[in-house]
Length: 331
Image (cartoon, rainbow, N blue to C red; front, side, top):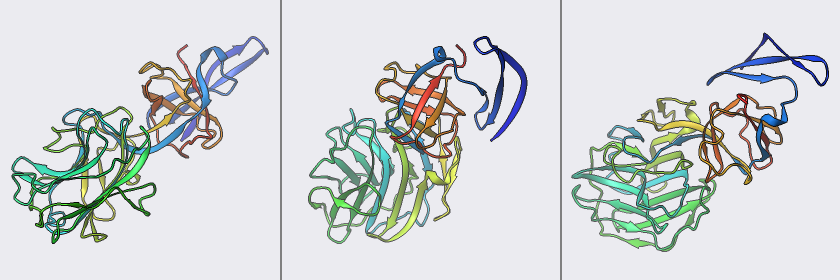
């Protein structure tokens, strides 16, 4: 990031000295910041953040907004399969069925991984492409706190039809969710549908929704703990990127519609309950983790979750020790 001194000066009548401004040129454009103390009347909110969120795929929950990669020989799995994803949900008991990950088209069904309105995890699958005849639901709900980040996993053994669901906080140590689920012993249909994130049927069905829902990672393995054949990883993306290429498996993921790679922070509980209340304002981390990051512009604010989407990638992702202030530079 490059700072340049401007010729513009204001006068501090309290101390009798000029105030110089800095223009910060960042990925989101030019932002104006003073080197001096911010006028308290311009501070809209201050507090300690509840959480910070690094790069993630943000999905608005409407048709046409998702990420996908085309079918390939590598992802045409008909035997044992192992599917994993890292995500956060605004509501872990959503109002409708919500797709996380899929290879599913009309008359062209292989599998999908989803969350039921009950909060139970499920996977629809097919042996013939036309019917969801290998569907399984978890026997327990994970009971996650709304907005929290977790890993989910679905495995299916074709020779026995046994399905298992798992959860994890780190993607390494897995706990089985409920008991084994029995489906018909059969292989999966070799669908030609693309792999989709946050939806199925070309971005038209059961879209993952919520202004603060996020996808961080998703992968497909050929076999239980088998070879990784497709990976979506936001750590390989850049802010606002239109596509992401997997360094592990080589496929390109296209980001469709208004889905986007973003960064965010969850403000204190005292922050405004009104959606968009801080849009266009600047956010500064004044102490704690990420201190000194003062270039962020708030592009979206969710008053229910207190989550502010920011215009730039974090140098250091804030956390629950980060003290911030929201400044209305237009005041």
